[in-house]
Length: 412
Ligand SMILES: [Zn+2]
Image (cartoon, rainbow, N blue to C red):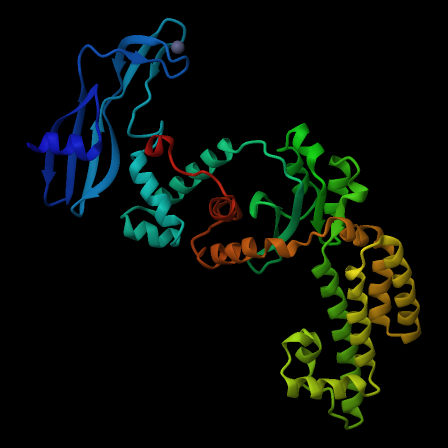
């Protein structure tokens, strides 16, 4: 077998293409493979698939291919143009690469496979590419994946915010809670940040949205109301976000009380911050005994903690009526406690009670996006090379979008 036949088989080059010659540049560590086609070939118009004669050739182009034995392997060819009676001269589709790419489809598929596991700079080094080349492959993959997305039903959504870097910059992330994937990412956490998402849905998808989990964040509420019929009964405030508000209130009470006690020489609350924030189920028996003493002491912090734990029982109810009666009881207990931070959260819960209790019907939280969140954390941690927010957004789609990313000619 001569080297041309060897490369024809390795590259999977088929009629009408053949390998005209192979050149080894040992010093540069490169192998150059020159492709040509038969004279008499007819070509398909890329617009209408009509059978056409050859119009002319474009100047020679190069495509980086998978290495052969550590040698960078580069394909060369002159892309033909078809002579379509209807569309005129058009560059034909080439079987080894997507239009506009400087890499063969197999090379892109390899880079994409590596990018799923390693950082962009790691892949750049491994494949001897520049960071920009790697990012270009990633961007094209995401564009392809988003274009291939079908308009599937999206009954349960989660809207979440992500902080980006330290300067209080945020991203809005919309998750498909049923399939555990990111549907949409936008800069900021304003109403407009979420508005863009609704525009990506078909009328049918919009009508099929049954519930949306979110923080008690008014811009998201306003956007959802503006775009979703019956939003009033579909918005579900995230249970864990509510628990977070209550935990912060307990902590404020503890800090104030600790200060008072220590001024009077009493150290019993010192160092207890995380004890009050932990879930009791994670206590050892000894820690539990110690905590019980704290709880049973006549402390404001103990009352705040009990109010918090009790409030969360709201989510155990099955019926809205019973849950509302329970909330009234809790509320009057909370007001007698005179603990300002708790009262403040209590007022917030009351004003938003309708969309807290929609949980009893829909049973969704943003915790369903935990797997996505930890993946986003990983993207962020490996993201030292991200020069702007848009690059970070692209990487989130790549890793968390559940997209079909491979170039068409590598797989079909
Ligand atoms: Zn045509």
